Image 1 (spheres, rainbow, N blue to C red):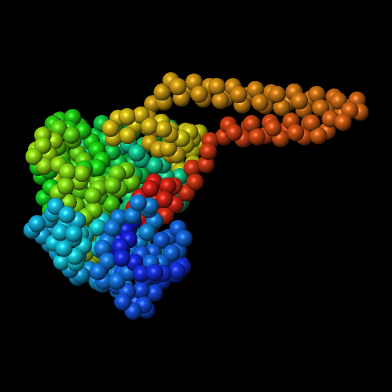
Image 2 (cartoon, rainbow, N blue to C red):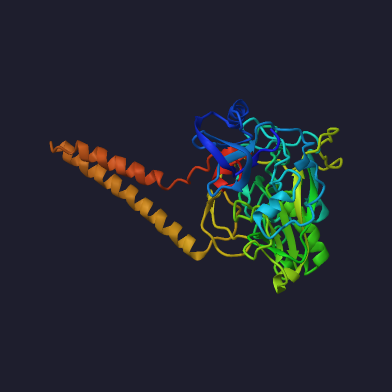
Length: 441
């Protein structure tokens, strides 16, 4: 399925009470309806909206929609073939920005990327994987915001899981957290050069498919980009910073904009964190020009991720004698699945299930000590009540129900001490996408 757009709708919808099972069925309804040229499918409730040819493509405020034309064309569609942003883009108004493009709409992320029948992105079968950074080549690979992978198959490596997952941009294996090799993966990772993550045994940043530049984004500051790393992480070297910033965006399928500022560091688009203007306009709420921050942007691009049809390029392999570390997916002494971490701005945040490890603050240690003490007290109290109930029962007092109630309370208290379930947070399938708030159907 080509040319479907995530988290968008076609404004100008016709009255419709259709409810269908998936995006392809909604698209079929559009083909069967006179005057319909575009559709919008809502995965949460199956609602199918139809629109005429003059409809405009807009971002939705609620995630979980797929919008597209009544017929998905091949990648030779004008939207995918236009080599660069047209003259006059971005324009002062949204309508002018749309009309500048051949398809009368600004290209969106993954618009020319292959999809599964339900609209979810699938791996590129041609230009499969390109290694952008590797710890073998002295890349630190200490990325934050990683998620632990706990369900690798018997013969599956952390690297191959990432290679086969279209939304995996970084993989890492480290043996500090649990004392045995553990697999971590991320959409793109942040602070990979001086992050709080333990030094990995092996890590890579990879790109699925390929990218093409649509527009140079120098000397302007696009609003609502997310900081990936600081200028200090590259020794205030603007050339090196720009190269590595481009790598970050290239490794993240949902990233269309990257900018390197000698003042602000590396900034990339992350739809899960902030929403960039669509279509892009020159208004001050969408971007800055002729300001100190804008003038500090020495490199930047508006890109599109593509999967060009062609010969199948084999997956990259390590040199002879280099083997990926063997991962223990279920070590005997696992760390807590909820771990404190710091984001790309180095500000403290709450706990996120199976996030990358960092040093626990004092309040967290105090909370753990108090929690354990309460658990022990509950168990002791339950045991005491059980003994009292037993003694009363022996004297003919009706204490059986009290004993059962005490045991139930004790069992609940003991259960609360266990680590919460991580759930199916791996493989970068739909459950993960929904939990991370990514812009996917």
